[in-house]
Image (cartoon, helix red, strand yellow):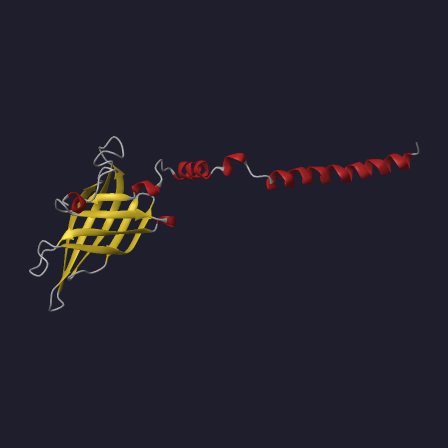
Length: 187
């Protein structure tokens, strides 16, 4: 076999080998990883990378508020957006004893850091800044499985538009997961 034929075949082989390697790598990238086909498993992997063992959606639920019969309902949505409301007894002359619902104007959950602000109802609104932590409850069916700990600010404005704020540290315990809201139990 002449030498230039051997060189030509070697050159063709040298060009063909990288083509095969590139094809194999491209095919491997186009083929989905079996672990990523399961969204739950992918979520668990993302949470492990973020250092959180509990998905944020697990924080959704009902929590105690300031007095017996009052509560906070929290729903964690996509990208940490939080919706919900505070249901409490009115304090003023016109609404004493009536249930008032303060819907969230805005709410955010970043990891375990929770913040929300409510709409003004009868001259009162609330702001919360704190964390969602594991409580003493052993399972979701127990009270205080999660606890909202932080600063609750109550903003009040009177007829003369004078605004005052009162801040206090709170620990709001989650209700057992299967428990009905307090006003539903009274029926």
